[in-house]
Amino acid sequence: WRYFVKVTSPKEEFPTIQIPAGLYVRIFFSGTYTKNYKELYSKLNEYLSRNHLEVSGNVIVKSIKDYWQTSNETRYITEFSLPVRSLE
Image 1 (tube, one colour):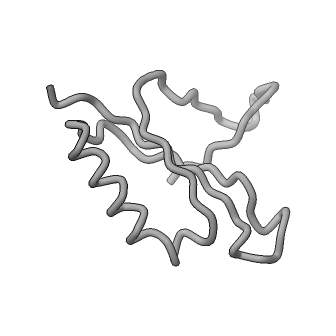
Image 2 (image 1 turned 30 degrees about the vertical axis):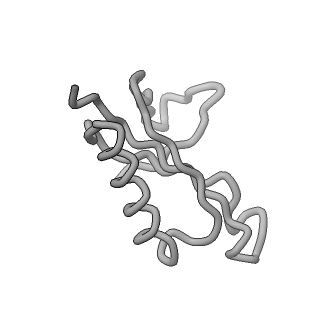
């Protein structure tokens, strides 16, 4: 699997890829993924269905605030970016 981080100056020794341009559905949540994933996927699926969208690629998970900034798991913040395309 892939881990995305913001790169300000690419280095040859670290392989990099660019996140493709396109339409993304983004959701932010607090707490840990393992405690929130059922609710997250339910909300995402409802939103996609209601807006006539379908998934068109792999989810991009970005840690905004994690164990490097706090030891309190309820204060973790994560962003999911899901590439989508219209069904219409």
